[in-house]
Structures are given as structure tokens and as C-alpha cells.
Amino acid sequence: MNIPQDTILRIREKFPILDREVYGRRLVYLDNAATSQTPRQVVETVDNMYYHTKANVHRGVHTLSQEATDMQEHTRRRVKEYINARSIEEIVFTRGTTEAINLVASSYGQAFLHDGDEIILTVMEHHADIVPWQLLQNRVKIKINVVPITPDGQLDLDVYRSLFNNRTRLVAFTHVSNVLGTVNPAKEIIAIAHDHGAHALVDGAQGVPHLKVDVQDLDADFYVFSSHKMYGPTGVGVLYGRRELLEKMPPYQGGGEMISHVSFEGTTFAELPFKFEAGTPDFVDIAAFNSAIDFIEETGMDIIAGQEHILLDHTTRRLVDEIPGIRIFGTAPDKSAVISFLLENAHHYDTGMLLDKLGIAVRTGHHCAQPLMTALGIEGTVRASFAVYNTIEEADAFVDALKRVNQILS
Ligand code: C6P
Image (tube, rainbow, N blue to C red; front, side, top):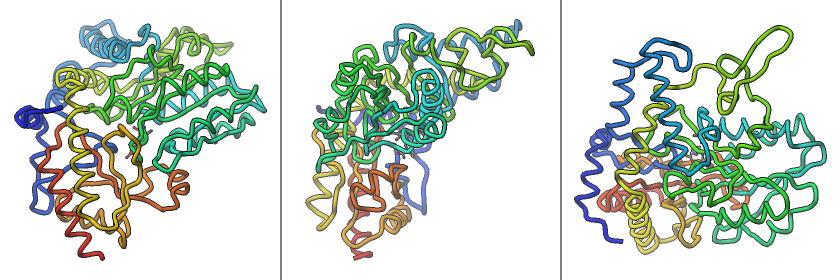
């Protein structure tokens, strides 16, 4: 795909933060898998709401409250359409991917899992899709089985198939690995789970920002993601859940707005999705999330994914050709625009700190995927991750800076 430079420069203009300097150099922001930057239109929605429309949602007859409620519910409809859910009742707002998985582990766990049942995770899961299931083990004695990876960083589907038995109830896996960039064959993984009578949860934190997701086409039972990784505000996430499952699941938290009637004799709960949204939601950021979806749709997923792949291919080629001894973790075909690597003789923290001094923002460490690090036999990596506003010049600045860092550290 050929994307005119002008197109990317016009997109960049929407992100004032990209003009800032770090240590006297123009920032090159390559930590997009941790959080992407936010275009002006999203920030303006936040501003406008605080200046003109701030009032609690679903709680007032007055104009401001009605307007704020309309804005929040408009985003819900928008998300429903964006991921092609069947109904708005299937869209639950959370604080992020992490809270969404905790909700499912706790509530689905209570309704559907019993002592002796089994679930399947993968070795490339983020801690957000491991620890909630381990916490559940304190309440229900479930067994956790783990799918390993092949040397290029793909899930070993033969082993996956062999892990099922008549106690397997759920498979929970990441759509895209935040470390390896591997795009897992979600539709196939879900179909295999369903063939065995198990449900499937997809951690879409790294999926939705880079791929067009259709939850009906995937046939996912749960699909979860965070706004802040898709050019949106912080503090907002989405749990998509198949309605018939959500209806059988008990509330995750208790409080205001999730009830139908409360008395000391007993309480009845609100309808979906409000049953799962106790307390005042982050309605300002939920409203602004709508503007992030506007941005993605105006830009076009083909342009977003296209530019990211141009950057991925260009950078990977240069790294391999020009930095002797570099090890890149995750080389699956059609991977997402994430490059995790180690220089031959350098600790990942040192590499990251020196890159920062040269104006390049990358992430270092275990990326909240310690079991994957153990499987790879390392403690951590440096990770560069791209977004649509990154340019070839920035990719080149990164590789040139890394060559200098490599000379200093070797
Ligand atoms: N990964 C990264 O730098 P939250 O923090 O709830 O928005 O998302 C958690 C999460 C869950 N699953 C995957 C696959 C993720 O990548 C993340 C967040 C960031 O890779 C921060 S650790």
C-alpha cells in the first residue's frame, strides 16, 4: 500500500503532543502499544463537556444531566456499531481492559465455573488475562492450562486442541500479543473452543486499535478493550459480552445505578448493561471516546494498518541489516507493528534510557507478560510500537539512535 506523506502529515497535525521536545530533541513517540496519543478532537470533547455539559448521568431530570446521559449513551451505540455487537445491552463500560477481564473472571466465574472445571490461557497473555483467573482460583478450584508458542511466536494450535477435555469451560486469549505482535487466528481459536462446548474471551487491547473487529463474525463470547490505546481518553474500557451470558452473570460490584430496587430485605438489579456499571461512570471520557472512534473512522483502518505495516517492515529491515547481533522477538507472518528486541551486549533498561536521552520513547521491561519472558528465557525487552501518525523519518531517527546506543553499550 502506498500512503502519501501528506496524508500522514495532516494526521500528525491533529496531535499537538507530537511537537514537543525531550532533552532538546523533537519527541519520537514509539510507545503506542502502552498508550497512543490523543487527537485534538478528543481533548476538545473533554474540554467542552467540562465547560458546558458536566452533570451526572442517568440521575437527573434537568437539562445538563439529560445531555450528559445522551452523550454517554451515544458512545455506547457507536461502540456497538463499531464492533458490530447485536445490541447496546451487550456493551458494558469499564475502566479498561483489565477491569473488563476482572469482571468476567469474577462474575462469569461465579455463574459458570465449578470446582474441577478447566480453562485455557496462552503463554503470551498479558498479566491482565492471567491474574484475575488466579484470583478466581481462591474461590473456585479451576485448573488453568496454557497454550505454548512456536519459535516464531505463534500459538501452537496442535497443543491448544489437545488441552480440551470434558471439564474445559472457557478459553481466554489475546487477539494480538503486546510483546510479539503476533495476530492470533481469533476466529479459528474461538471455533475450536465452541466445538468443545467452551466459551471464548478475547483480550482485544492490542487488537481493536489496529484491526477491524466484528464480534459477530468472530463469534466471540466476550471481547474486551481499552480506549486509551485507540487514540481515546484514559479511564474507559469496554466489555462486549454475549447477551445470554451477561444475563446469567451476577453483578460484579454493587452501588448506585446498577439496581432496580433496594431494601434491607433484598435488592433487585437493573437491566443490562447497567447491572454491571455500579457508581458514577467516567462519563466525560466515555463521551470523548466517541470522538476517538470518529478519528479512527475518518482516518480509515486501511490507512492506520497500512502506515503501521510500512513502518514495521522498513524498521525491521533496517534493524536486521544494520545492527549486528540484534535479537527480535516475534517474527510471525502478518504481525502487528510492534518490535521487541535486545541488543547483543546491553540491558534493556540501559538501551531504553539512552534512547530517551536521544528523544526516542520506547518501552522496556517485561511488558506485563512475565510468563512469556520466562518462555523466551529472558527478563525483558526493548519494545518499539507504531501508530498511524509515525513517519518513516521517525523510524529512521529511531534506528540511527539505536545504532549510536549500540556503539556506546557494546
Ligand atoms: N498493555 C503495554 O504496554 P489496560 O491497562 O487495562 O488498559 O490494558 C491491559 C492490557 C491487557 N491486554 C493486553 C494485551 C495489553 O497489551 C494490555 C496493556 C500495555 O503493553 C500496558 S502494560
